[in-house]
Length: 190
Image (cartoon, rainbow, N blue to C red; front, side, top):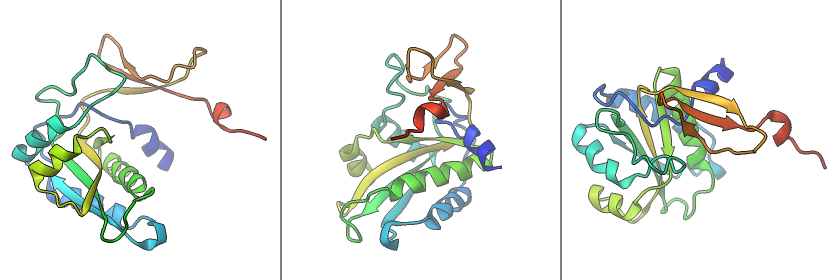
């Protein structure tokens, strides 16, 4: 059921790093994104697959993980993602991408979740360094990076408390807690 997949689809930041994610599976996930709606049906998105150890070790320092966990520098060795998908916008097709990359990212992660994997949408990227390292032409905007792998952490959804604090946090056992606003708090009437 879709609701069950959405409840499982959390921003995972710790993975079983040495469980390789093969090209065929990543291509299958990208194919789901290919089939999604696209503004004016222009289909300006392109995708880079990075899933060998040499590539994944090169991209890792260009990413920032979990902004609310200020004392945490990201997953330690052995818990890093075994695969990444870089979502690019082809500016020769469309100068500015509106929301296509968000739709594609969510679709890819829902597909990954259905396959027993998890992921994280990363928007905090050292884009110039990533472009230089992987020789990404200037005609492509670097939009998002998706980290993908089998999850190595437990993530729990909670209702936002009376203090209205929405910051996620980890408890003493490493369980990742994610507060979500209640349905009645997000539906407005005018």
